[in-house]
Length: 259
Ligand SMILES: [Cu+2]
Image (cartoon, rainbow, N blue to C red; front, side):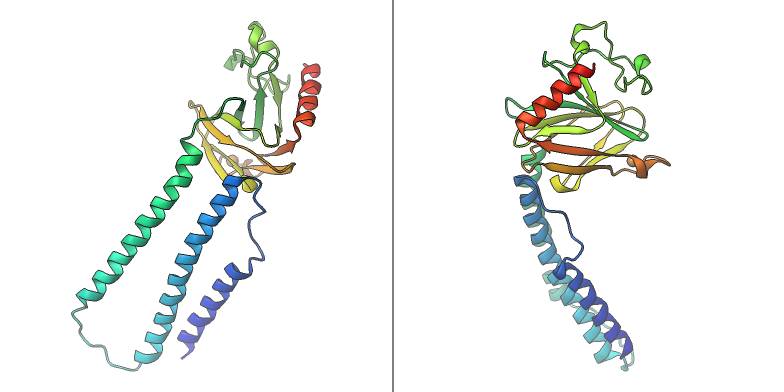
């Protein structure tokens, strides 16, 4: 009887972990993150119920049949049809429900007035670039990239549009405004991950990948690299600083005057 009891205990402790939620996601800071949470909870409820039922059936079968000699059986086609079709229905419905969330996030263009920010990931730092007053990103050159002189993007000042570009090691954004990040990597794969936004996106060398979001709640949130990118991967972190529109403008002016 020890094995069925152990199975029941493990099932109970596992299920309790998800019900009590002592260690859980930080609160969401926008509508998309709340939508993601409700979809996640729905998936968790469905898979959770199936998990508990399967473990109970397993414990019961072991307790009931453990002392009987093994018998040859031909299986049960009806039962196999039932569980195969039910699994298919659950998976296809979950994928269809997730599709709406995925396309709203990944396939919807930014509204006009979105703030475009360049993002570069490299071993083992994040850098962010703002267009400055002209609203245009200036030319960059790989040969001009120099962290020591404060030019992580390799801005080429012989181009007028580059002269007012602003770079920062932290991502500052105004609350409530649509943001479009244009992300690239200078070396290997990295991943932009902010828990409170519930978003995660790879940065790929040679590609410029857009990532759209809006952060509604002012505060400072961790940006963590979520793709194992080398020995210093654990140090590759920055901060998403969400402030009011006025605070953002004054931060931008301060950065521009440092140039
Ligand atoms: Cu990394």
